[in-house]
Structure formats: structure tokens, C-alpha cells
Image 1 (cartoon, one colour):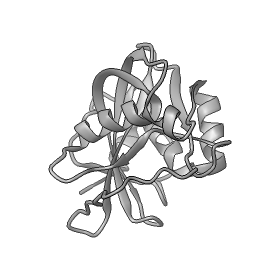
Image 2 (image 1 turned 180 degrees about the vertical axis):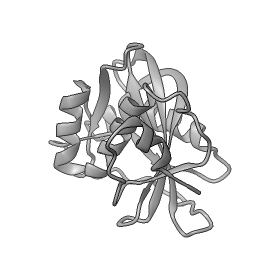
Image 3 (image 1 turned 135 degrees about the vertical axis):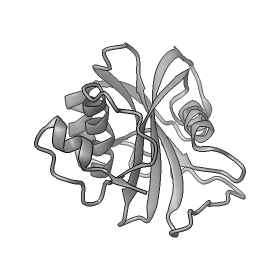
Length: 180
């Protein structure tokens, strides 16, 4: 069952990209595991929880709302990993890290469309995302990279997730994302 929101308005930026927000949910400071949810279109596959920014809503608020709706978790919103651009689907997703403090027994999407959630190691999550949402793999790569960079919270970073830069080391990685 595909999740459809009645009367939802899609918000676009000045370049015509749909504005989205998402969270990489972690449950420990070492960020060794991340939470994925089943896709509403293909429930056998896993994705990062996230969705469209609503009118008069800022991306951090969207990210927290989407995680509650799709994954049934709450927590504290941490650093922003950047804005990931997908040219194929014409959307830009601002991705945050959330430290999960509570997992609800039931949540909106578990009741309405039978959505499931599961914790994965980073390597397993990368493998799962490769099957359905390869552009979301870049969120996890940036999560890992940001742990080693001093300047992980640089505002205005845009990562092209359709054709990402090839990174060879942390020094070149810091220079690779483009500025909006």
C-alpha cells in the first residue's frame, strides 16, 4: 500500500527542486547502527525515514515529524549532514542525525500501512539501501565521514546524490560537496 497524504502541498526551492528532510536515526553515540523503515511502495525493501517539507515548516521540524510518522521514534535532533540533491527525481533532502530515546510500540504508519522498522549496522544498511534507494547510501557515507571531520556542520553544503563526488580521503571529502 502506497502512503498518500490527502491535501498535501509539495514545496519547491528557487531552482525547482522539491524540498525534503530526513533523519539518520542512531541509538548510541558511536553511531554504529541506524534505523531503516520499509518502503511504502515496496514493503520488502528498506529506506531512510523522511519526506516533504510542508508549507511554513522548516526542515528540522519536517525531519522530526517524518521520523515519528514513519518510524515511530522520538529523540534529540543532532547535526545536519547536509543537503543531498537528486537530479533524477528533482528533490533536495536536508538530512539530520537523530539520537533515538524512545521507540513507540505503535505509530501512524505501522497502523495505517503496516510499515516496519529495523536497526541495521552501517554496512548492512548500505547493502539494503543499494537495493532500492542507492542515493540514500550517500547519507550514511556522510554520517561516517562527518564523525572524522572537524567541520561536519558546515551550513549550505549540497551533496549531489545522483552523481556524487568520488572521495579518496577525508581531506578531499571536505572540499567535494558543492555550496548552494
